[in-house]
Image (cartoon, rainbow, N blue to C red; front, top):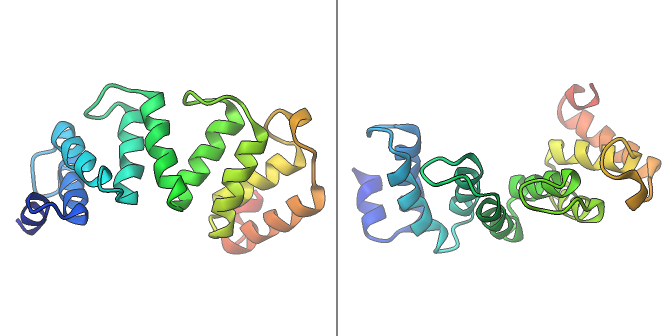
Length: 165
C-alpha cells in the first residue's frame, strides 16, 4: 500500500518500488505491463535504477517488445549517471558488438574502466581479459599485460579468488 501511495504521488523511488512489485509479483499479481508502466514513470524522472531496469525489460522483452535499441538507450542513461552494472553491460555489448552496438574495444574499455573505478569485479575481469587480448577484436586495442595483471589481481582479491578461475 505504501509503495502504491508514494508511486501515485509521483515519488520516483516509490514508482520504482511499486514497479518491481509487479515485475516480481511481490504482494501483487505479477504483471510485466504494469511494472513497465511504473518503471517508465520513475525512469522519466531520471531515477538511475529505474533506467537500469527499463534497459533490462527492453532487452528481455518483458512487458514490452524486445528492443535492443531501447534497451541500449536506457542502459546508457543509467551508465552516464554512474550505475556500475549498466557501465559493465555497455562494455559487454561494445566488446561483442551486440544489443545494436558496433564492436568497439575502445568503447568497451572506456565503460569497463568506469565500472572498475567503482570496484565492480566482473568489470575488472572483462577489462583484464580485454587488455590481455583474450576477448574483443585484438587488433583494435593494444594489449597491456601489466595493467591487465593488476586489474585481474584486484578482481581475484575482491572475490576470494573466484575471478581468477
